[in-house]
Length: 293
Ligand code: G1P
Image 1 (cartoon, rainbow, N blue to C red):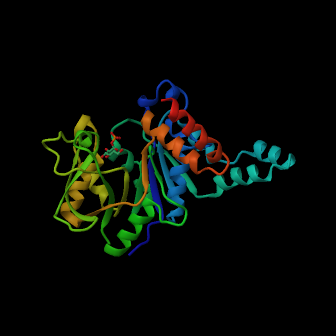
Image 2: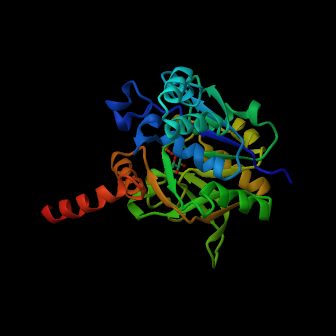
Image 3: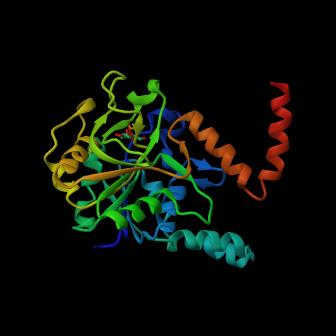
């Protein structure tokens, strides 16, 4: 069985939930404390052993490519001014993985965005990490992508993360149907994109972390436009389930919807509390603020 060394990060969305900020700055470049969202996501992949990362971006997103490129003037300036720590941070970013950028020329949906990376991924299993979902896992634990890669290694099946959501939230997510289970793993029987509450087969939602075998690409190619007229990854997942099976698992991490204003603020607060410089200032500030609310 091939090991998972490649990842796709779809990052072509327009970021309308973050307008006006996202008018000229890709939403993936908005910072959580001092690191852009996309860096948190790339780091999750790298911690899981991923070596090649395909970022599927779109028009107006070249700041993402620049971010992972060399920055000679900045590096030179930091070296000459003896700012070794900052220099190391900057150099580490350009060396952390082989970043490959492809463009999704039309906004045809998440399934289509993943398909844009097919020629780079080839016939290897790969992971997908959605560009606006941020996961927080302690350094000594496997990341969510790492947990899925382990599960794929154990079972040989495509593996996806799921989380339990409230009834009123099922219509925001892809929701799995599954066979009965007594533990935190579920044999998936189909996936429904953004169902109404009455149509939802469960309350187990996809938070945007997947490991797929390469045959998902053929399933995407066979998909007709689904919800919102888009080529949906979830529709291709249902076809894949029927042909080769899929396993879903609850995961061990704190998850933030960083593409949403509230989720973005939560992520900023929680990552800042963990930051060794900001945390000690922020904690008493939040406590005193809470007393005034
Ligand atoms: C996408 C997927 C959906 C998934 C969600 C997670 O939807 O289509 O299945 O549950 O991401 O964030 P989007 O939020 O892009 O509409």
